[in-house]
Structure formats: C-alpha cells, structure tokens
Amino acid sequence: MITSKKLIVFSAPSGAGKTTLVKYLLSMFNKIEFSISATSRKPRGKEKDGVDYYFLTDLEFKERINKKKFVEYEEVYGGYFYGTLKSELKRIWEDNKIVIFDIDVVGGFNIKEMFPKETLSVFVMPPSLEILEKRLIDRGDISKDEIRMRIKKAKNELDFASKFDNIIINGDLKESKEIAFSIIKKFIENE
Ligand code: 5GP
Image (cartoon, rainbow, N blue to C red; front, side, top):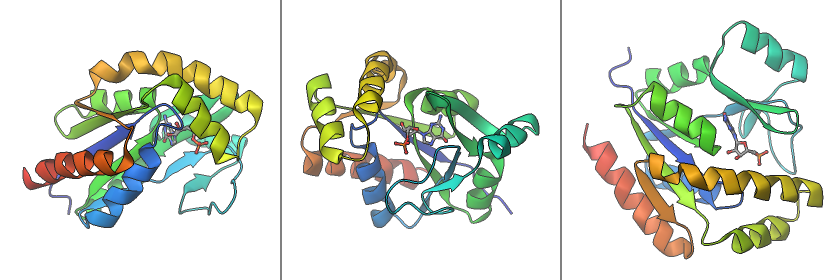
C-alpha cells in the first residue's frame, strides 16, 4: 500500500555535479531511492541496464511513449530520448520510499509542475560556464561535439534556476554535500 508520495528532484546542466550529490544522498538516507530513467542512448563505460538506466532501443522507447508509460520524457541530446516510467514511481512508492531524480532541468521542472506539493526541487548550479566546460572535458567520456551541445543547452537551462525550490552553487563539493544533506533531512523529517 502506498502511504505517502514524495519526490526529490536534482536537476542541473550536465557536468554541474548533480549525480555526485545524488549518489552521496543515497548513501546517507535509507528512506530515498533512485529513480532509474529509461533512455534510448547506448550504455557508457561501466553502466548497467536496470541500475544506471533502463536501456531501450529507439523503437522500444517510442512504443512506451505511445502506450503512455511515461510520467515525463524528453529528447535530450540530438535524437536520444530520456524519460521516467510511471512503473518506476509506483515501484519506489510501494516500497514506502521517497523518489530521488537525477534528471535534466526541463524534466525536473515538469515533475515539480506535476506534483507541486509532493516535490522538493533542487537546482545544482555550476560556479561558471567555463568551469562546467572544464568538468565535461575532464570527464573524458564524451566527444567535443557533444560537449559543445551540452554547453549550449546549459546556457538555456540556467534561466530555469529561479523556478526551483532550492539552488546549490556547486563550487566546493564538501560544502555542497553539507547543504544538500540538510535540505533533504528537513524534507524527510517533515512527513
Ligand atoms: P547522460 O547521457 O549524461 O546520462 O544524461 C544526459 C542528460 O539526461 C542529463 O542531464 C540527465 O540528467 C538527463 N536525464 C536522465 N534521465 C532523465 C529523465 O528521466 N528525464 C529527463 N527529462 N532527463 C533525464
């Protein structure tokens, strides 16, 4: 039985550090569980199906769109789809846990619009676009073209920051972790 439905959204331009913060929070709070998104892109590095993403073919993804299986979905970077399946929220809520999302800015904004009272939304802001670009280059797993695309997208995404409940400027990771911890602790305890 689902007793309460709560959601935490972490959104940011790619490379701002939201994934690190989400992983940290997952290690600190038993009560929250990661929403595994579906994507039509191929796995990178050590990524595993059903752990990092549900990896679908383009056709499988489109079939699920037609069958209205998604809470939200987007074509994030040139032709690749990313989305949150309704079944994923059900799975986590039935376990009496709070869903935490690591999704792009528009996706995060849409979740907050769909569940305004139940959602705590956090925008992770890079200290500057230059630092963001450097972080993406240092990651070493994406092409120059993709980096250019992500920086272009980041410029638009920064305009959304004020629509989120909280903004964390991620310059110093230790400090950002502390801020994220106290925001989430308060949200969880307010049940
Ligand atoms: P990546 O390919 O680097 O794993 O992710 C690319 C972008 O897609 C990131 O900004 C990531 O947060 C976003 N993303 C991941 N899952 C979802 C989702 O379910 N919905 C939306 N809208 N974006 C997502």
